Image (cartoon, rainbow, N blue to C red):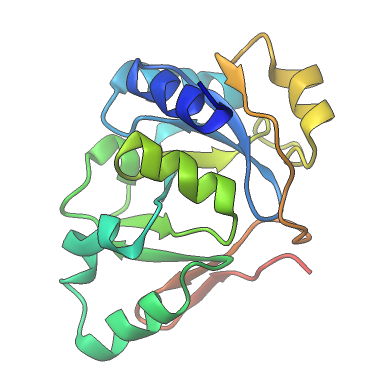
Length: 183
């Protein structure tokens, strides 16, 4: 079994993995597994009210949310993926534990082949929040991920970031920039 298949199997069995994304490492789990979500929040020391980000292998994985958008905005979102851009999409199709205190859900089809492949092998969107403890800088390489989180997760997927300087931009479909991409 290769790393992608092992990571997807781990996620399907309720596990938590660390994996590379575009500019930082991510902490991932099945978005429908409350115990795995709770583990991520505990590892990070993060409040559930903030919500969690989802990544997917293709834009089709976010069809339910994308269909709620006017065609012009939907086309803009789809044109940005795969990319280093996270969009706040209508969240009706997602559990409240993912949305936190928000009505929207943060979604991305990443510009990182391995991250997309893990989500595709899993069979749909996965939680992928930055790999760090609240208030600390996100992990940016495999060695750091293993050194700091190996004993807290079920798998650290060998890999490297896609070379971006940091976390993705976060955009609201109403045109607001929530967070600029790291330079």
